[in-house]
Image (cartoon, rainbow, N blue to C red; front, side, top):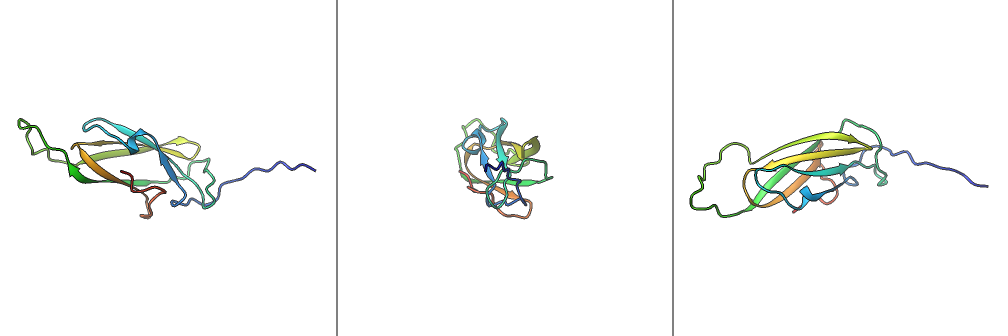
Length: 122
């Protein structure tokens, strides 16, 4: 006897949720960088539908790169700006931009404050 089975993902679990893409490792100040968050359930199964999830992305400047002598040091405003959108199959695309070159730690958390797998990224 053969059985065909399919797994339906359960309730969202931030500790199993993952992120991938070039924006997790590198960004250029003043330019948009992106990465993808794959929402998952507690069993690590990929969520396949829109769950109206929201994620917080916080970048902490650990080491600022020196500014050229001619550069005005008073940049002002936010250090980063970010946006996210649902792109299908339980995935969310995050786009962000940093204004200051340097080494950052990136914290990616669900709206309840729990970090996703691998967070913080550096």
